[in-house]
Image (cartoon, rainbow, N blue to C red; front, side, top):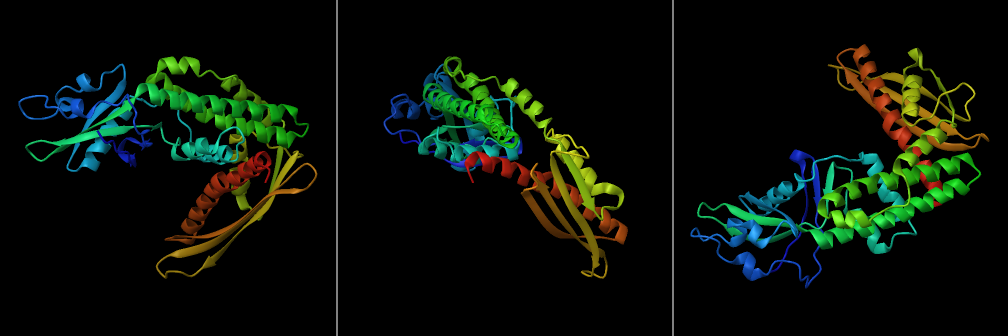
Length: 357
């Protein structure tokens, strides 16, 4: 039986399913005669009438999907399989993006491993790999049905191999961190280790469901909780001073302090690091029915020696029914820019130390 794989999102339940082409000649797939044989008087195949007879639970995770087209039926089948993996461990989008960036510059993972991780988007609650689809069948109402399945042994082997390689990468980053005498580099490599380890926790959690036997063998030589604690302790030593000019009411400085605290960096008047900048707003004319302002934000983070580490410049506009409303919207945009973009630039700086950029 010829198998087909696709890449798609099941947005309704927040699941991303990534399928990888099955190795040709794989002997563990059900034979086409078994999958296509008639399973009952209605003329539907055996995999539809009695799925366990063709895809037994000890070898497969499977689900039958239905829809108006084969593609819709495949999406429905994949969603059914995904429901087996109730979300217990997940990572946010920024952590997943940093993971992709870090493993792409890795010396531990091979080129094929990197390509694999790039196809596995771990930023959603659950991400599954190696889902395959069998033949389709159409009932007498014109409804299309297809079975999706995940082979436990080969898929477990894929996961276990990647978990081990990720584990080796984590240990390499930890070694670099512990061997560095410079605080910024220690933090950078420790942060990188935590990112790869966080994504590895997602893979390990799924592997326990796919194949407990492989999960037992996919041990890693690090303690994830210990990494998180070490990172929090190290960040606690990296105090940061905050100064923002023209910041009436201190809203921008407050947003910076809050964003830095989420990164576990204490704010202090005489910080080891410094973040300084300015904010400015000016009224502009866009639509006579609304009041509009343009805002400008400039920030710079400097290191212990006064060297510039991160620069951030942005300007946008905001509108409201009154000037006060437009200003309030502008401050909301600035706060979001600080939390996402400026902090993202800080993380990118630390990652650049790891990647040698």
